[in-house]
Length: 429
Figure 1 (spheres, rainbow, N blue to C red):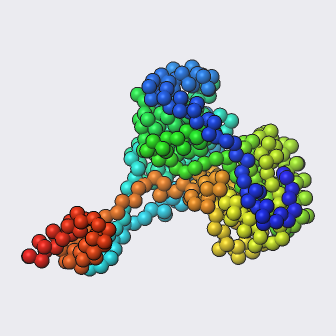
Figure 2: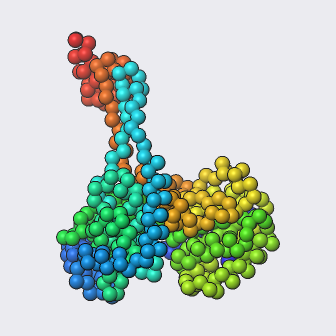
Figure 3: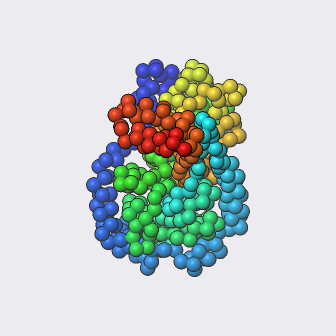
């Protein structure tokens, strides 16, 4: 990591910038993919699978036989782990449900809000070097709790035309049986616009590479909703002398191994700890299977020495990390100071990977500073909030003059008349 000692506040804005690429240059190629999928449907998906995934598919959908074969390939230990994670995620997200509460804002005027599931949702699950069946749990569980009627899963196939067994097993646990062998921008296009095999959905969820990210942003301009702006994974660790350097290094590497474009940041008020973490990073990195990815991410990462916990918190809130780990003494005293973060992990024994897999919170989170304004995926992400109001004749008498006065002031006579004509009828009775 690049080591920085006591940076001045005027340097912070430069330090919180992510090492992101200019993605606009990808747009033209992605729009061409959209056009191809719109015009040729399934044929385009088959053609693009051969071009980009190097596989000649016999069909786009995973078959019953493939589901059965996948289940036999998943170990009993992994099945048990998936089911435990499923349970914890379900428990946490179930308590997010809002009950309908009617409110009488004034006599005779009753208002309420109701959560209604988004009927059709698309789930994009990366395959490739890291088949993220955990993300399928994070998206599928709240979608099921919300009551979404139709779930369509897209995931890139392997070179032999199969879908990773853990993804298919997890899909079966969730009751998701429309699994489309498609990845990249073409999968996003299929979910957004529909093909003969892939029904168009109303909202698309899930992470992906830079092509998927830009494709999701582009379809959001066409009336298809997306979960949130997403980019490379990131973690910020705040640590003092009470932290375990080996734990800190492990947490940093757990995000760095996602990919070369990930970023990890260590903030500390202890130069001794900073040096020890660097030593641990070197030792742990050497034995990682994905050390090449992690090393490239570390090249873009920061180890910053600061004066105090308060200063570290100010920097963290400006950075707005996807994941924030507080490995500091008396972390409870700092909680109220956190204003910008996707998900927070407290103390020396709360690794970020717990949230990635099984503690129950969702790991689909805002990155690239979007935590300043966005929340992570939750049950709310899969519902719309519809408001209702019921006004009795007596209620209209109570509120009518207020509406008439405001409508007249805005010069909207028809708005005023919609009340006035009713008041005449009520007063006549």
